[in-house]
Amino acid sequence: VQVDGTLLSINGSLTANENIADNGGLVAAFNAFQLLKQKVNYPKHVFNGLKRFNDEQLFFIHYAFRQCSKMGQIWLRQRLSVGQHSVTPARVNVPLQNFPKFAKAFKYFVYFQTFYRQKLKMSAMIQPLNPKPFLNALAGKPIICKLKWGMEYRGILVSVDGYMNLHLANSEEYIDGTNTGALGEILIRCNNILWVSAADEAEA
Image 1 (cartoon, rainbow, N blue to C red):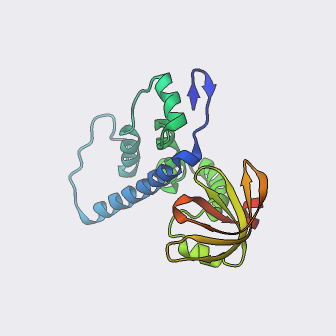
Image 2: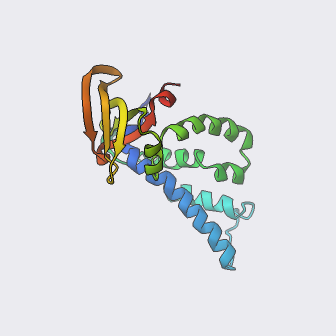
Image 3: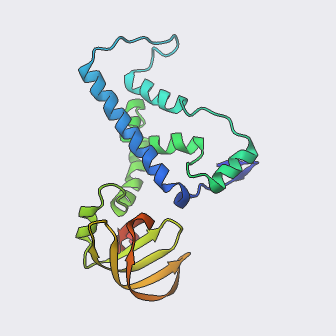
């Protein structure tokens, strides 16, 4: 995001939960819209100038339009440093880039196929939804567990309890990519976890 002529990054760790919600919310809303079209013969009123867009395109246009806003540079810089939501351009552009139905609606096939292939590896590594089967499959294997505030724990996943807390053995702590020492057996509470991946997939 450009602020006062300088490119600044969004804090992915700080905004992770809301980013997941934005992506999931877009998918859920689009699926609900498709169900509505199947079940209800709704009247179609289109403003002049919008008649060239089909239903799916209008859905995505409205999705972007609802986020239209103007931020001052000071406020934008503050949001980037402490806000739990990504700033407005990213809240529109990134979920749409992640959603194949958007590319299909506007026929961005060539661009999207290249972009989406790059996403597939990350999708396989990080499992934010329904993680229990994924975690159970990793039992007995080396994993990487990243916490919401940035540090990582690497070790063997011994077990996952009913609350999805993780029991690791032979664990090591990493801060900013640097090994800070061996910890042995540890228990990581699920509400502190940002993501979990198999160690071999994360390092591939």
